[in-house]
Image 1: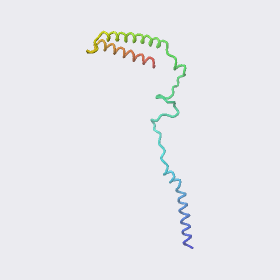
Image 2 (image 1 turned 180 degrees about the vertical axis):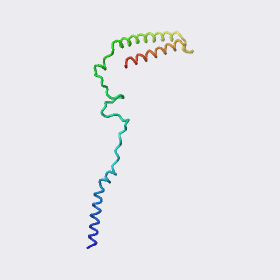
Image 3 (image 1 turned 90 degrees about the vertical axis):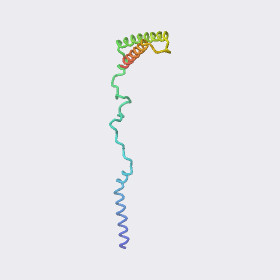
Image 4 (image 1 turned 30 degrees about the vertical axis):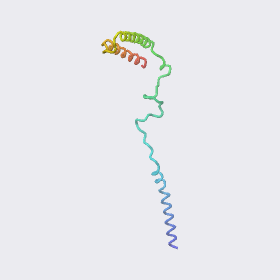
Length: 122
């Protein structure tokens, strides 16, 4: 009979040990949760590089009339410069080296186009 009591106590102690250790073992078998990166985008912000845009929608759509006139004048100048460049290239032989005037005119057009782009964006 003592043999069966010893066996019973061993089974009860083993079962109690397994039940006590089950939360620890269960957490060890779970995959670890990732730590959020400090550089990760904030999920509460709408998509965009600089976070939410706090300006009212009416303010976003309005363009300063002075800036608008400046853009129109620059576009007219850009058109005339492009026409002059086309006329110069039509008159020259492009199979030889490009004349310096043509290159300078193209650079001037490029600068003006960038200026117009910056004015319209900002």
